Image 1 (cartoon, protein in one colour):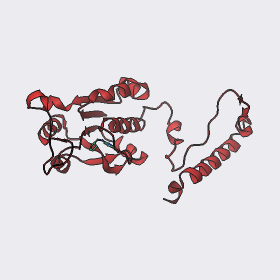
Image 2: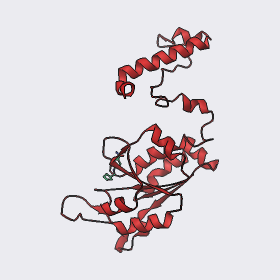
Image 3: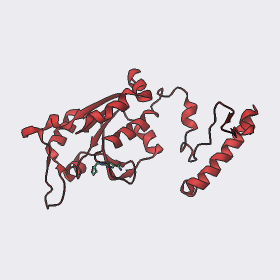
Image 4: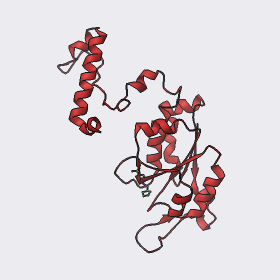
Amino acid sequence: MIIDLLSLFPEMLDGVLRTSIVARAQKNQLLHCRPHNLRHWSTRKHRRVDDRPFGGGAGMVIQPEPLAQAIRDLKTEQAFVIYLCPDGTPFTTAIAQQLAQKSHLIFVSGHYEGIDQRIRDKYIDWEISIGDYVLTNGTLAAAVVIDAICRHIPGVLGNAVSLEQDSFSDGLLSPPQYTQPRVFEGMEVPEVLLSGDHAAIDRWRQRQRLERTRQRRPDLLNG
Ligand code: 4GN
């Protein structure tokens, strides 16, 4: 999978790309991420890409020309263009799985008051939001989506089990987890986990998942 990112702060992605599972996916050539600085496509003095909003108001808007030229330059037959914004479709595991099937994604990251609406109308295939809050720019949101997608690319995770048992994979939250030592500051590990009875452990975990979901996220149970 090839992922292009168009941003005013492409270097914000570097830490994510250099680290952990995303880095390994790139090394194993399952993923190739290319962060681009939108200013590269500016034709104005000082490589400016923004201007004041028509109709007035605070802030600045990213102009359409550099974005259109950048998207045209990067676009392939299979390319799917995504804009990160608070008014997009709420991001979920299901969307991550769906996007992991694509071979070429182009992420557009906005700044200030966002990008010119005509780009959204003509060049963007899907608008996605990672949650009900506003970031100073969309690059961290793109990083979140890229990380979540990456885990669903075949071969990226060591064992498929870790994916299957994730929170949300079947609509339930994860159970509590414990490791050594068996007693920590007076607190013991639940007896059943030390029993070696795998059927009993599975039942206990499933009950914990249901209980946690009921307490913390009842919306997941009721749809
Ligand atoms: C996306 C972008 C939040 C999200 C963003 C989100 C960039 N903030 N919830 N900031 O996924 C237009 C206005 C682009 C905000 C700006």
